[in-house]
Image (cartoon, rainbow, N blue to C red; front, side, top):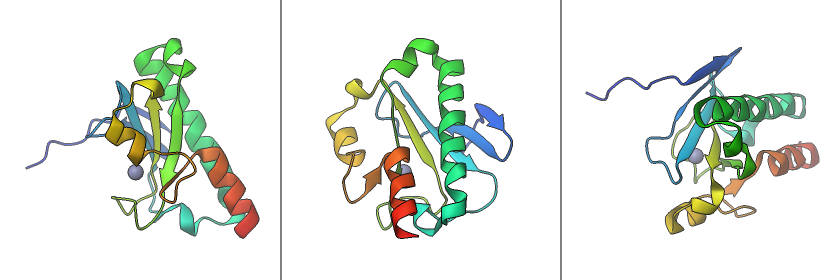
Length: 128
Ligand SMILES: [Zn+2]
């Protein structure tokens, strides 16, 4: 049996836990408590949720790793079919410069499979 996931931080409709395959010292996942399949399904009026997820992720990061962890953060979403979990989750990774080679591929900005929270908001505003 898998051990239950330890919730690091919780706020409103969101909770934060550690990625079980971290690519840097701090690798957090922020998820909504209700089901949302992926960023692909978000509508324009839901972009506020992305901003909120990022804010919560940074708050959690500061709490678990201290304010200096905020100096080098990579955040973002995986896009289907490259998402491994069918539940919306935002990655928050710090320090980004310590990422492994595999991490750099997996979390490559502006790739087909990963976009930062900011680029995701832009995409939704342009395509929805
Ligand atoms: Zn992911």
